[in-house]
Length: 181
Length: 235
Image 1 (cartoon, rainbow over the protein chains, first blue to last red):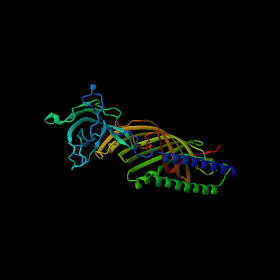
Image 2: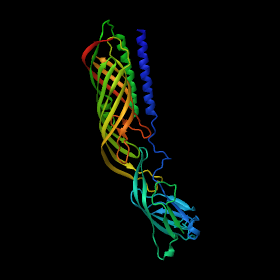
Image 3: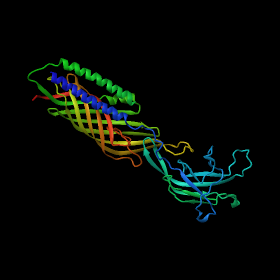
Image 4: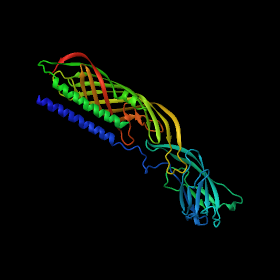
């Protein structure tokens, strides 16, 4: 009789131990929140170069550059001074148009700087890639093309040339577009 | 949803073990005792309960076991589940049927006249199902263009999955021939076919899959009835 009691106790203990393991496994599942470090839809990386430099290889910084997408309500970047910038492309359509405004005025009343607005249209095809249950899907882009809208006279454009270096956008490690001015 | 179910499970388990103790005290001993062998059929209670409580779930599972030798039982489960998973950026429905085949071992040394079980079991599971990608959003590095939410309703039919599972549980004879059981299951995926553009987020019978491993967990809370077929003396 004593032996039976021990046996039942052992059995119950074994079961409770397994049940505790079960709770542990359930409790230790990863949160269904998309981690900040997960690589999602890549940005389009643009580098600016001096048009008159030998081999067109010297980076050049556009002065007070403001970038705004056509149809957008706010600037993507305002009066930045950098030779490299990464911009997002639309994920719902195969075309994104941006205005690149050189010497952008600090305010509407500021008449000291002479703004020069150039428009570049990016066209591409989109591929949808599954990441995981928390992050859902991302886009990668192929067949990227960039078209600079010519103004009349042509000297009105501050950008001289736009070259596509990488027509496939899967990450942000390399420059996709070079802009010469 | 998961927390109240776990609470319910734990609570009922304590209750169940209480009954076990009372039962043990009232059991009578006889010198020559023959053990009953037969077919036990039942239903999982947790799945219909979850169907009532959870709008995103419906399911039913039938189960059975057949005592073949001493403490060894052939065991099987047959079920159907429909699970809608609403993640923050993704909504998916998995639905289909499954079968689990395997064996149970009774690790509990019964007193004469008692037929309770502490079960260690092994199963092979197979499911055939469909997954519907209801809606999703595209994750972006920049929120400049706002969220892009797509209503898809893309259904992929004819998906299959197979897995093995280890289970541990109890089965207690409440009244004559009527058993109440509970168990937990640890599963490992062996094979699965997935839609071309996404993983299987859940598999009927397996439950929710894990993005980072092949393991899954499950539980059952069941009631079953023994149809006695013959008696055999205990060694």
